[in-house]
Length: 203
Image (cartoon, rainbow, N blue to C red; front, side):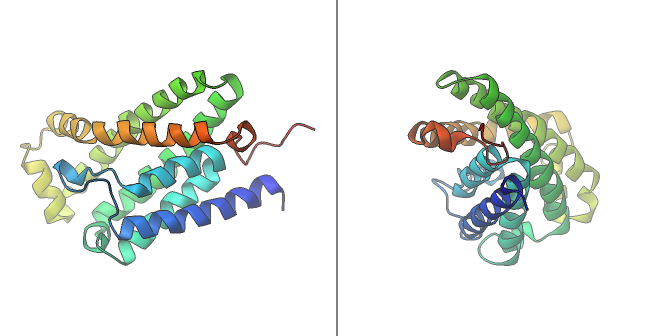
């Protein structure tokens, strides 16, 4: 098996376990607030895994973290519900993580530090701007199967636009914190280790 395949798999599993433990324990800089938009430590593992490990590592990390969080710990009751679990698994953990992996490779090959950090900020913003509405619309379609999800939309009189704006407002501090923390990681890493694991090194 090529290194560009097995290395992201191992990296994704390790980051997924770490992310899953922090997710299950609800480890965050603060928790609660609107939509429970705490700055969870698991999100840092997700972003770093997708960026440095690529789409495969990102999908493994996100999926494994969610499965662990839905199986044990403080988040089990909230995340094990099918209407919450499956849309998050497909959209947040697989689709968006894969897109993030491709996006980071794109900026890695075209920008050098510190300009790369500005592009990275755009990726994180896009991660929320695209992923959040996809999740909102999907859960809205399935809301009748979950009393908790249905109640969330009814609080906004089933107005998707108002609900989505509230989501963006609630998650803005999270996106900002994730950008700052992950940027500090990239700055601390030598250039060689900022290279995505699924890129063949130049001979």
